[in-house]
Length: 378
Image (cartoon, rainbow, N blue to C red):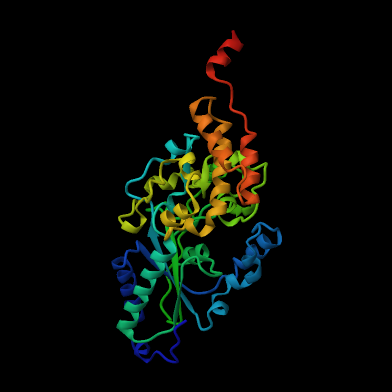
């Protein structure tokens, strides 16, 4: 955090006008909305502790290590009294329809937020630019920027700042933008006026719960990360539980099913941010092709993306699961032969994790062809 013992230039400033300026500058730097809130998350802290006590964070040990600190911004960054929350749309302007890829077992589905440049880099740079703009207007002030990079309860803070409300899938929802956006924060000691929280608008809808392939949304507003495909394909470092592998389908990095089912995403806005444009054709590419990438190809093509963070070993693990599920869904023929060839090629991979998932995939049996089914029925 950049420290300043005093902020005399703000003592006589019109803080309400400054807050409006910050929101205007935020739009200029590519954000779609800025909200300001205080640091009181006492109503959230008990739910966080219960979630951790139930082990629903899986092997994301950093969440347990930080514990209640996540709900106490003033402890994370001493002196913080306000949080400036920002949202930025990410859904690419040109992208293959999600349902079309999910319905094609031989294709790889990548969560739409990860198709372009790593959002951490994009948002952090823009938040820093916004902070610099504030500093140029009022002089040095204390602040620290975050983009999913520290124990920050970004959804709770964004909800308090009036940007949206927490949906039953635990993601933030906005009436004008659905849920396809990133969040970032500036922790600061500026005594800015806070924005009003808006009411929830989910009503009795439970489409997100019903749509979850693995039943990870165990109840409204309750997520068990250990069953979540996003967690399993991104955060989880070990073997994916066998019982969950068939449910993952062709989702090789993240999962958007709860968002795809959400009625509010009919209002989702496409981004005009070039950094979030699709790279490497990852919005619609074959599993066999991606599984065939060498480690150097993986690093060369995915450097600078969020996907690169999981590393080559987990990349191959995820592809093996997708290919196994494709074998179990596609009729026997040239497509399944190509899949088996690709899997056989990595049967003796140096990684025990990859070998385990390849062996599982090779045991998947294609369904009988339609012609054979017709013969059996006759």
